[in-house]
Amino acid sequence: MNDVFLKRLTAPTITSGGSPPVFSLTSDGKLTAKNADISGSVNANSGTLNNVTINENCQIKGKLSANQIEGDIVKTVSKSFPRTSTYASGTITVRISDDQKFDRQVMIPPVLFRGGKHENFNSNNQRSYWYSTCRLRVTRNGQEIFNQSTTDAQGVFSSVIDMPAGQGTLTLTFTVSSSGANNWTPTTSISDLLVVVMKKSTAGISIS
Image (cartoon, rainbow, N blue to C red; front, side):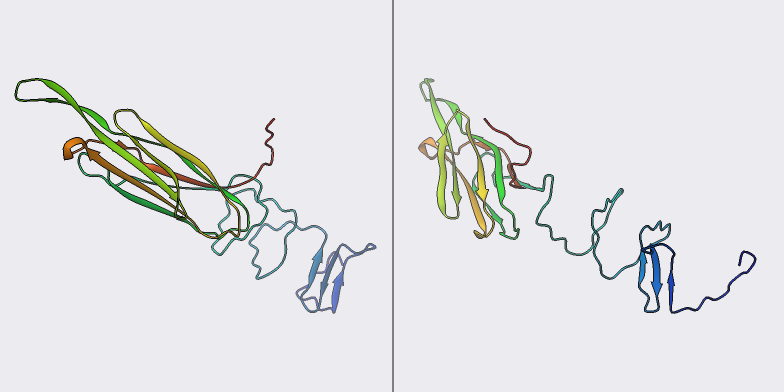
């Protein structure tokens, strides 16, 4: 058949030689091949892939569900605290949904806050000082976990919070307030809030 050009081949099945055969195509469209190199596109509506490698970028337009992932799965969000032109005052609420099947940790990098020391002179030109106070209060699911005030010394809050899967939504509130001696207008400051949520895993980590 070396010199024969086939325009059409009709057969119930096409099977390669060998035992067992490494290639077959049945009349119902089932293709079985031990190895395949495909240079064009592949379109599939269902199936299973085992032990595959994606060498370049991959776009997933649907929902991705994964129970075992090697590597870091991290989400971050940041927000500035409410403030006036001179002092910080207001609340930030963070809600983290319990929508993953693996345990996670919530990390709050240091939040820095402070009040101030102010110079004052009376009618006799006598010098005195008054203070602005900045307070930060943090709750976890309604329970207070931090409450500290400071004047001219810097205050700091940071935390790592475990979030086991199946325990429900985690709600954190961060409330900053400011006050001045003698009801004077305070001058306070606080850094932005950053929340980092990551998968909890001890793989590759040893502490002794």
